[in-house]
Image 1 (tube, rainbow, N blue to C red):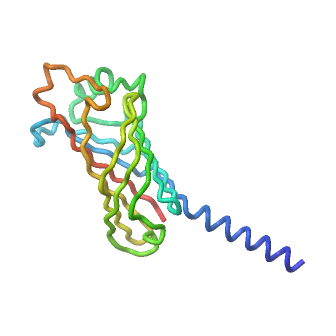
Image 2: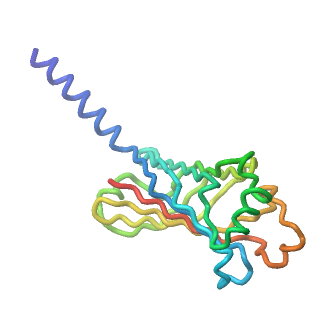
Image 3: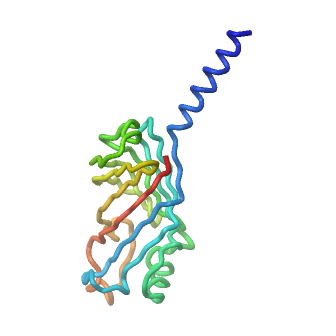
Length: 183
């Protein structure tokens, strides 16, 4: 009987440990400004509707953003973004799935700032492209925050920008992603 109790306790402890390596959050955001004049606030956009999963023991991460949750400071621009450029009725989500290089699960147990990188694939507007970018991980108390800044080219995702506005748009839009996980 003692052996059975020990085996059950060991299985329960192992299962708890394995499950503790997976973190999910709905506290993920993306922001960007595609305008050549970065001070032009009407082009600034942000979504706080992102969800993410971190499989810490495998150093894997996945991120999903419903594109319709992106809000511009200019409502007409938001309408064009959804209807004409990203065609959100046809392609409702942008996703990322990849791995974290230089990351170990033990980083989540000690406060600090860690410079790592991420490699994987971004799927947006029905097109999947390879992705690689530096990531800053800040662990503080019971929170791990991942910061990632990179650039996206609309043409790489078959997003057509009309010539009437293309002279106002950057060839590669700077994007900022912030993902917070409760530990």
